Length: 553
Image (tube, rainbow, N blue to C red; front, top):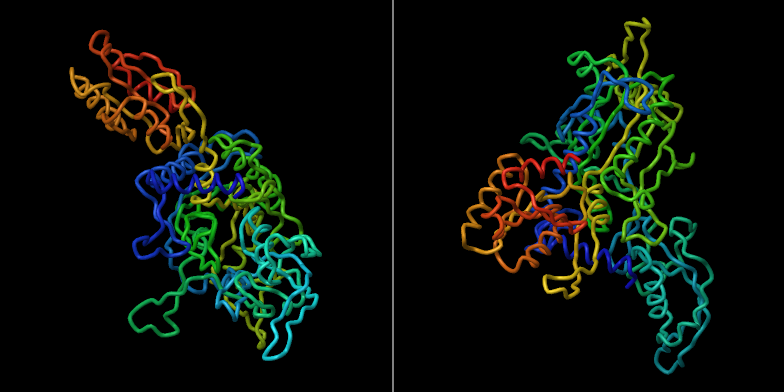
């Protein structure tokens, strides 16, 4: 097992042990691609959402131009429904185009996402048992050995599968001639010589075919074809179809952003890597509307601002990258797209996984919902009768600039972040194991989650040193004062003080407050910092204010 995979296993184990994340319906064997957030996990994810909302909308100053922004702008919120009119998904393109390619194995009866299968060409002598009186034979065989294993684990799995296929013992692995580097299965033109990830013979994979990722449901009691609907695969369309409502009701002027946090659903073929790829997930999205001639500058602004948000909340800049998409990666309507990516521990060294995409979508979305589904030339798609393939709403979603006295369809810049992926990234970044002396000076291993204080599930823990001499009563009052101030706090009077500190370190609590014998003498308590381990005495009547000041600082 590689160091990175071992690290990820430790993080997953901590998440279950300490109540951050559980497999959905675990007592019934679980449901792949769905996760439940436990008592600490729900606080952490809520803090991630609130940090995003506060930084993007709540604290936004629409009067003053922010640093790096082309001009001042407005930000407003929206909460659209999960189920929308089916025509929304037809005009947006999801109904026809929102799919992945999958392949099935006729031997193992398993299904794989085509772009997740990787492999290498291998050649070796393969022995074949003779039938009846016929002697065994052997011949050189060249096959494509595949795997869906993540990260560095894939190479070892390919070796193991090749040994099994060629009927060789591990000590003869050098007899296998590997004739290519690791390549994706989708690069092959012919699948007839492929050994599927869970198969023992070649040629068991079907040809790739489309698999629509939207979850289908039914509205009403009749359940006919006309009652079909879909759980939304993204939150963005709710903001596009409400563009005119927001403009008319809020009196916002371009440029402005509509922001939304909400659940989305995608029927992923192979959900994997903990919460990174799930079937139910939460998005934090902005649709920023601006003049076409200013859109390039706004695209650069939002790329930089969203990257900075992650570093401000504690992710090391060398673990992040801002990757601009190549032309062949871009959607047909996209002017430009950049992904903010993080070096997750479950990936191979040097690989990154997407945290957030920032896309310059042009005027594609508003025009599609006005006119109907657009083609690659951004013209309305027509059916065989020359009629619009999927009709738009027919509503005017253009914008009238009353100062310039002109009407136009705004361009859109879309920063789209995953709340679950961001939470996972903050968890991975916070996880550390170090050695610290205990109360007797003996070095002990300490597991600590170094969350940014804004994200920490518990902001402060309060301990009475012993269960007598009035210490529990004083500690309980501090605990209640912290709660009244709106701070998440913990109270713990069980075990040695060193063990209590370690318990709070493991869940990421930034500050611990200890009531001891000196408290009754001078009305002070000990405040311990999680990261520096510095302990200072502070006045009893300033504990809440001190914690609030440190959290703001």
